[in-house]
Amino acid sequence: MAGAVRLEPVDEQNLEPLLSVAAAEAEPCDVMPPVEAPAGWSLARREAFREFHRASFDGLNGPTRTQMYAILVGGEVVGMVRMTRCDEPGTVETGMWLGRSARGQGIGASALRELLNAAARAGMRAVVAETTRDNVGAVAVLKKCGATLHDKGGKVRAEICLDSTPPVL
Ligand SMILES: CC(C)(COP(=O)(O)OP(=O)(O)OC[C@H]1O[C@@H](n2cnc3c(N)ncnc32)[C@H](O)[C@@H]1OP(=O)(O)O)[C@@H](O)C(=O)NCCC(=O)NCCS
Image (cartoon, rainbow, N blue to C red; front, side, top):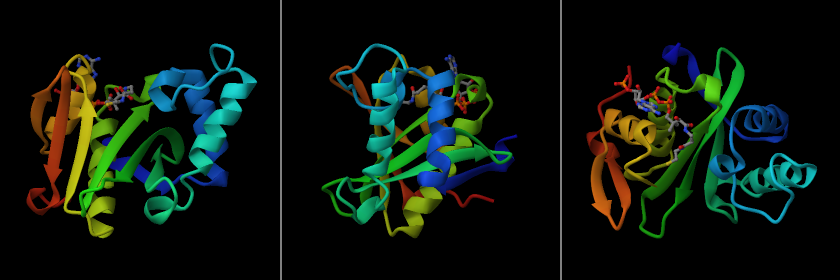
């Protein structure tokens, strides 16, 4: 299963499938910033989800300095992984979510490895992430991908140095 994981830049074609997965299988707080809208996947929140992703269509050199990728398994969209340029040169911050039915199968680690490859191709030297200790899945995925973890004020900061990341076969 994990071998078939592929990333596609989020664009107008995969945006609706991505929204369908988010609305059916994820909480708004896991997939987008908070917005003033009726609770749940209301029409206003769905439109805000689209606009949030469209704002990053220009990628790392665009206004949000963010490249978002749809995560595909067997051609089906199952989640999203992104990288955002940090102020420190050569460094991007990453974040990811999967629909509930795609979790716990190793897809998260495969998607992050693909993201590391994309970051290296974009000339990056380090990928960082922030999560919490109670997010067992996220911590495990980061460790599997070679991250060093530091606890800082109730959060966990992860750093992956791309120079030392083993090649993905
Ligand atoms: C975090 C997330 C991307 C992880 O991806 P995933 O594909 O489910 O992770 P994996 O299947 O590769 O699991 C990695 C490891 O964590 C373990 N794990 C995953 N979720 C777990 C949970 N809730 N409790 C305990 N262990 C868990 C798996 O068993 C696996 O361990 P193993 O390698 O020893 O088998 C996914 O769970 C998710 O989308 N969560 C909601 C959004 C989110 O929290 N994003 C991260 C924000 S920082």
